Image (cartoon, rainbow, N blue to C red; front, top):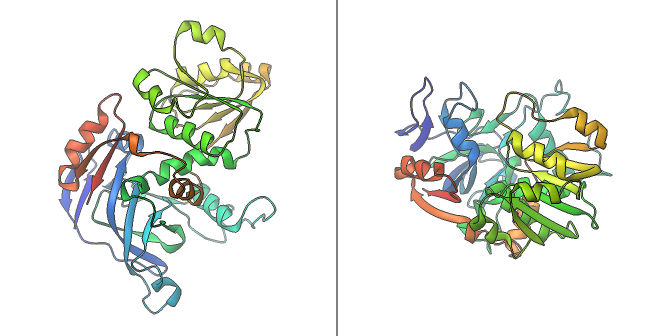
Length: 348
């Protein structure tokens, strides 16, 4: 099969011919139909996860072609299903403090707890990021428990948004936003825009304000946000201490500093994007003085994201800027690197 791989040793990624993977027990072989390029993929090329060698990509939709145990009737039911897959694969060892933790059914469903265990297992491998081949290839393997069936009503190009949309929905799942809250989403990148879409679609807040640097991107969420503002010194002054909850999705020290200023005393700061800075950008003294609660947020519920797409409560079509065949993956990555670019997808 063909796969777009990071080779390591400082070499640029390239399309190669490689062996088709074999599904193990309780795994499926998935024929990838389409995959999305995200900021993490671009960071991987720049050695975000040092030492990773393998196929890139983790936002995808595919068809289950085969399962590891064809004698298992429950496993065989997956064959032919159109699926998406959660990217974290847990160790499931009884010696793991995360995987062996009992389910608290009073707070979450068993499926949600299982997904959270996968996300936080210290021994996990991550599709296209850490120790497991990704989706920029014709095939990949995943545990059956990681798969979700895609409703027929959802277009293939839209399904490739499930992983980032689920990450946006995680904020709602964490119950840090009250219905009467004023909420700011800081950042108009791909994730920030999807966060705004998810918060409005789920009616999570009474007022939603999106703050970013790009007028043309902010225009994409004017129909879902109460207000959209471009960053400026004047805005900084007028919005200080205004918001009950601020969701930081820029992944920059400057963005986190701005978020700390505009969240109210006693408010909540949600960190959604990974900050690339090796030095802590969080002013702990300011956090303490303002009594701010800091909440980390990553990954999210695929079932919720699929439901929003199936019910057409989130319009992701407007975020697709380009579609390339796998054979032109290098060109697709170059396009995705261009500042201000929205979603670029690969078709297999």
